[in-house]
Image (tube, rainbow, N blue to C red; front, top):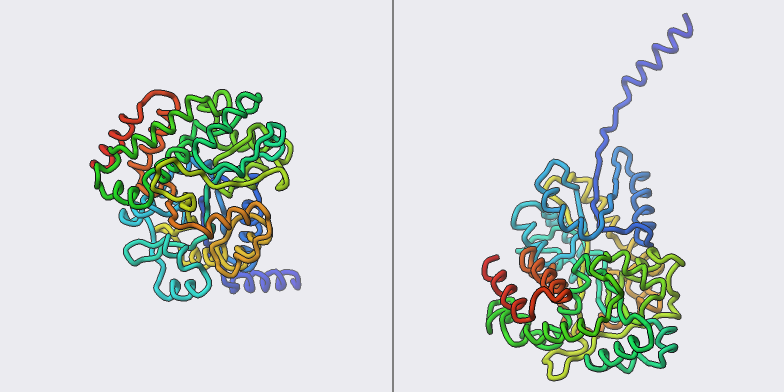
Length: 417
């Protein structure tokens, strides 16, 4: 009888205990597997889940190109995440205009702007509304392998012009060393070469005019010359054998294994190459970084940079708890840890001085000296034109399109987008 009363009492007590409704927050990120990023993300998520009973955050990772291709469909489905990675730019603007994103409340924006980078916040804003929080600033530059440079008897830091770089490519070829590795199958790594050449040839004013459809838009002598210089480079066979069948992850693994003299890639590659390499990757002492060189007669400056300001944005379906997590996920403490551990170059001003990694410091210096920062062209110009830039970069690399035809196609795409 006594046991029955105890059981009845326990049942009554359990019935009286309020049940905490479970809120699930799904975050979709580009591939961070086997990189320092994932370790940081996992720790932030675990801490948040432990300190917020009733809320479970899950981060899902997707390879970059798959992410770009599948996200539009996901955003229109019941499987849309609560937040996702964004490179900002034209694709982000399209998502905001199409109603797929959720604007942050004004009071949240005002509070976040006290701690987070104003420039980074602005990168994730559109038409006066803010949709997310910034994470990292990124720049693309030329990495070089010091061991292979010494073996070849060259000094990449002496490269000042495009012709200087091509001359060193020839030295590498003659010495039996692959000049560059690239993930041609993904196309976007190839677009860095074409983008930089266009920037160096026409400068900021020319790039702005192209975007506005002035001076022929993309169908002008400067874009044709950028394509011609790019093809001149391609004809030297600067990449590893079968480069069009290799994706970014495979190419950065080759770089990490010391398989090339150069690598044109962003600062995020520090962790990515080590995660993809078979032997842990190159040490900082084995690598150096130089800016993309000038093109003779060009209107650009060597201090003009290409890159991005990325972060995470909220979708229209996001729960209120997603805002709480976003502030922690992209918050000051997480970015300070990222800076001190060499994960990435943070956008939070108070974290910038904590960057100690010697390679990331070189990238930070390039960014700090920037006279004009151009967002990745495949993101800046939106999905149609940005995709076309990637496509022609790959098609010129395979000889399937001429520089003239590429310029015409880009302008046609700009007119009809």
